[in-house]
Every structure is written in structure tokens, then in C-alpha cells.
Image (cartoon, rainbow, N blue to C red; front, side):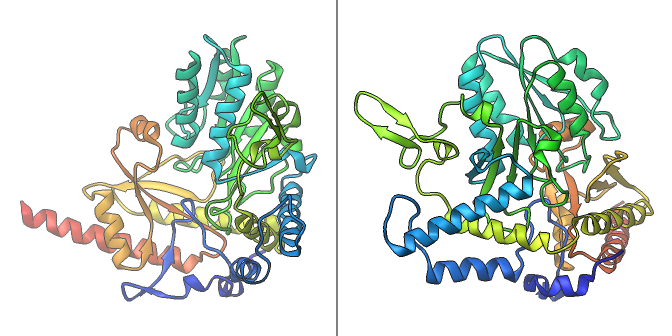
Length: 413
């Protein structure tokens, strides 16, 4: 069943505009998605009528804000199927969530000579924080590689894990290869060796139904702006058994219980990890985005996005000299590619002149670029508000640009 995309698009007025004189085609959803009017109106209404700093106040606006903020936490809890709201921490995004775990888990559980495992396909945000922690603690960073088709070499994981392995961090979906990793299998293998697992859910939470209890992951991180919500807000889910033992990431207001110059005691979960005034308007916007998505059958949306991926892949493969990076059997709506003889930056710039928004560059994934021995890639990424007609327009644009560069190359000889 295909959802009524024309009706969905009416909720996203940003899509109904001309860019460089052409109808906007937005294929940069892996970087950030757009917000429906329902999210924007909810945030605006709240800011206009309710705004007041949360917690520890007696006046009406503060109490209403606190209620809305904590209701948003409950919305997130239900969306993830976390066991309790104390396991849902609001952050500024996936990057801060991972940094929080790398620092606080590292302080509590990792020492000199211990090991941390990441994968070769990780976003920099799931590499650098672990490198920083390893440098600070004298630990060792180990890497699970992927094959040329973009699939993790899971068969190597058993030998990679040792008695010194303290945590494994892995993307649910690669932001470059589009690979949907077998997270449940990875978690099960790690847990057999008593190794906790952090899942980078930045590219999965907007597109799949997530159940952290069924996955049995120890930590799960995602961002609001990739799932039709505002920027600057994100979530860290963590099992209480770990969060209770981890020291705070930041110090200041809200995360304290009692402060004296002799000793400070810390607040209960989740507030122990929410120092300072949180982005409560962002949290309310994120909850509105989740509620918007939940207004549709999640599986129908996911199936439609998969149809977009299949159609786009088939079209791009018809273009001579175009190479797609990552063709795993299980893929999300992300395609990275290059065309012989055309620099990705040139291609991205010229596509923009035709109203087509794509992402170019190293995509915060230097190890992936190194794996394929390329400097940059072009990335197209899909959402349920994209259409088959837009994919056809992209295909025709690439054919046109390839012909143009071919003529230029011939004239230069």
C-alpha cells in the first residue's frame, strides 16, 4: 500500500517552492529532514503562550512547561519502548549522546589496556568520542571492518571481542552506505561475552519502529532534526543499571541534589545527566514530530521509502560510469555514488542549479572514503515525502550533466 504522498507533502510547505527557478527536490534527508507544520505550530504556540523555565518553580507558566517537558519524555519513552522515563535523557543530539556515554561510561568502567570496538562504517561522531576516551584512559580502539558491498564482517566479531572488551559502539544504519546492520545479532553476540552495546540510531529512528527492550541494547542515541523535529535536541536511552553507575557528564543546575563546598550529591535519573536549562521547547517539538509520524502506519511509510530506494538504485545503475558505494542486502534509503570524470562538488553544485538538493563531500565518514579509495562522494537520501517523479527528474538531470561533461572533455582534448 502506498500512502497519499500528495497529502503528506501539504504538511511540509518548505517543499512547495522554487530553488534557482526549479521546483525543489530535497534528497538530503540523511543530513536533516524537514518539519511538518504540526511541529512548527506546536513549538510556536508553546513559545507564545506557555514558556517558563522548568522544575523548581511555583508559578503557573513554569509548572505548565514542566508538565509539557515531562510529557514529551514520556512520548519518547513510548516511542522507544524504554522500561521507564528515568532511562530517557534529553541531549542536544546524537553526537552529545555518544560523547556522554564515551565520557561517563569510560570514567566508570574503562581503564588502561581495556578495549572498545567500533566499526569501519561509523560516522565520525561514533569514532572520535571513543578515540578521545581511549587516549584519556589508555584504552585500545579496535575496528570491525566491512566488505566492499557495504556489509559488516560479523564473522570477525567473535575473535575481535576479548576479556578486555568493555563496550561496542555501532550504527544501526550507515549514513553513507545505507546498510541496515543486524543490530539484534550484534547485541546478542556481544552480550554472550558480557559486553554492552551502544547503538547510533541517528539514521534508523526516523525510519524504523524502534524497541530498545526487544533489541536489548544498552544505549541508543538519536537526533530530533533527522526525524522531522527541531535541531539542537536529541535523546540518549540507557539501561538504568549502567546509568546509575556512571558519573555525570556535565556539572551545574538540575543535575544536583545538594551542593556544599565539602561535597555535592547528584540528582536522580534522568536529571543527573541534564545539567542546566534543557531545550524544553525542542523536546516539545520532538514529541510533536514523533506524534506526527505515529499518525501513520510506520510499516507502510518504511515500505514506501524502500520502494523509493529500489527505484532510484535501478535508475542510477542505468547511467554508464556511475558507481554506487554500498549494496548491502539490507539497505535504508541512502545511496552514495560517483560518476567518472565529474567531481562530486561540481555535480552537487549543478544539481542545485536544477533545484535538486543532494549532499557531497566526505560525509563525516573518512574511513568509508579510505575504504573505497575516494576523496568524496555524492549522497542522495530519501524520506516518505519524496516521490517517484522526483527520482525520474534526478535521473534525467544526471544524464544531462554527464553528457555536458562528456562534451566538455572532448572539446578540451
